[in-house]
Length: 434
Image (cartoon, rainbow, N blue to C red; front, top):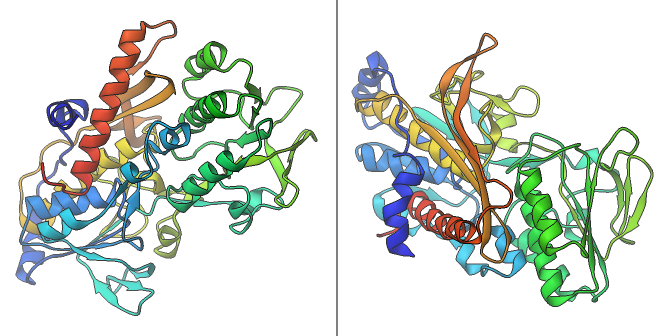
């Protein structure tokens, strides 16, 4: 698997991403003031990748990564843990590789940004100065859009849309549920992290039920009329889980968006008034940018507008926002996207602060979804900065998606490809030794 990922990762990501523009006078200003300081908030697919590539490209820069958790559990591939295809440990990674590279890793919570003084305040009391700040805080949850749901309620009805203890909790509830119990899965409204994710989860939980609790059922209550890779997921339901899964999409008569829950009884109520009593309720609320993005003044509505290509904030100078928190227009919120964006951001920072040459940025995304045993489907595209309807944005090109009825061998090869990608991206994120 390691050999596969080394050969394939660079090919899959399209050679990474590097940014374009000349360094200009800002570069000389930063160098004149001494060693440039880069502070990165968020140690996931976006932030960790920026830390790796900035330090690798410009070792002279002072790079600090702020991440509250000492270990990072990937949200991508966490559905495979629920389905029994991966261990929790295989999804969890430390920051030792980045530390060895010279990145200063601070396990603390960023609580505020002073854009005028160019400092980041930490919960522990420290204040970090920066020349360039990168925010990659991921998502926050709009708990108040569902009556009865809250951060406390999520301990009984886990969302598991931030991987870690929530993922373990959802798996534990599935394991302790009686055979014959009902699982209710409620996806959020658009936009949200990983558009195909709830439906891969549907398949993975259904696979677990089919293998371990065949009398149980899963009901999907979706506020949307359609979803990513819908024909492929419905093909999988009909092929593997027809007697287990019931998919409810909102239509002209019924709205299956969840509007109320009772964590004590397990009751889930839809907008149309239907009520379901769940043994396990996986409630995924609507989403917004992570809190620090709001504190920094980078948001407009729920998300952060950015300059296409560089991911510089459209609201605050010398601050980049990437990954799930940003508005990347046609580019979906995914780990692959964040990793691709991070390389462009790292190259831009290295140019501005260290005078490194820049090249046109290239962005790419692929989302694989495991729907059954050795049966993986995918969707993806390349992206570049451009204009649409008079607005600067990342525009998709060369899009592709798996087809229904594909050969089993091809689906198995796509699963192996996805495993190689996972190994490659986590090696890239955390600067692991080859």
